[in-house]
Length: 231
Length: 244
Image 1 (tube, chains in turn blue, purple):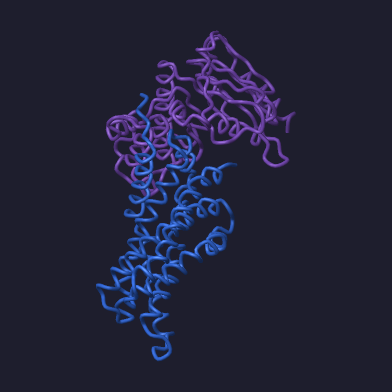
Image 2 (tube, one colour):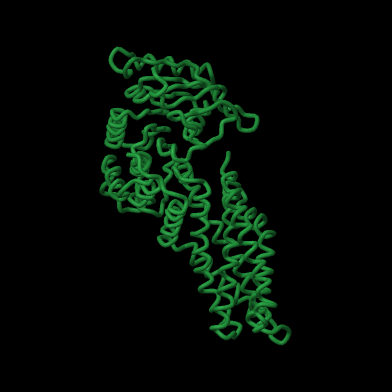
């Protein structure tokens, strides 16, 4: 029974849906990542001297640092399920492009980290006493752009690291240098947005940098992904 | 034998992992409806050969073609192949039905859920279909894995120790499934340590040692009546002992 093999987008969505179904079934990764993010915010909050730095200057940095590490925790599990009982082999012999597998994994990871942001952003607004609507709109917009870059890089390196004995160490070591420009641009853009600085002159250039990184990393990682699977 | 009937063709196939040679120049031609039983000691290269044919590994030298196509290059041609391994290749958190349905969707089958149900029924897993795979016994997981690999009715089925973990009923269901696949013209390549079991379906038999075919036999039909499987098994053991 030969079917009509799915196209790139359809195959990506099939893979993404499967990953999300696994996460919904277990919820273990989501709960642990959300807990990690909230605990990180709490620790930063108590370590912070409110007389030294204003909340608006500090909050975005705290969010993006916490979000980056929490995201890494979640991304690590992305290929873990594939290695268990070699499910990845069944995926690789299926009539779908390797790039579609990567895209599917990245879509699932993007939804996953966005869900973490949905909890983390209001929590930051609460802890740092930020105006909720402005915080959610500023951090939410920047968060989506940051998530795309983080996920593009993290998904690729998760595939590379998962076959190694020190995957937990290797994934952050490989990913963090590439995360630096994303964290930097995100923190700068969101700080300026929260401070109500002129959007076109001060915020937009950082958003453009973020968008450029997202495009470059998404394309480069998609092209590189099939090579990570060669034995 | 016309070229059109050739389903699996390997020419001077070689695979090295670093300095270690896993496959050292294998030539193989199998046609529609033929079945090769592949025997050999651990580390002989049997699984590597299967993985090369499935397109999971890139050959160091030589070529592999399935129905004249390089499955590593032609994505759609991969739908011709079904792979069953001693790993279940299943997602433990998903149910048996979800696992097989996921594969059916990847192969673009119409009505994937119905196709998944049929495949599970053929392996007699209807009752456990809604249970997460991690709660199933090893034997049931193997049945689900076989259903997953054959849901799209592949033209070439590669089986690596398919009977491991199966009980009597599971083994009978698998044999029946393989017979029906062969009757539909599928080409089978079965890696097993059980000579008698392997020869039951085979039209070709090979013993592999150190990445080569140390012995290769072919019969007009299956190795059934008139073939002394016990003697072949004894010769196999002797060959393996010398190779070791």
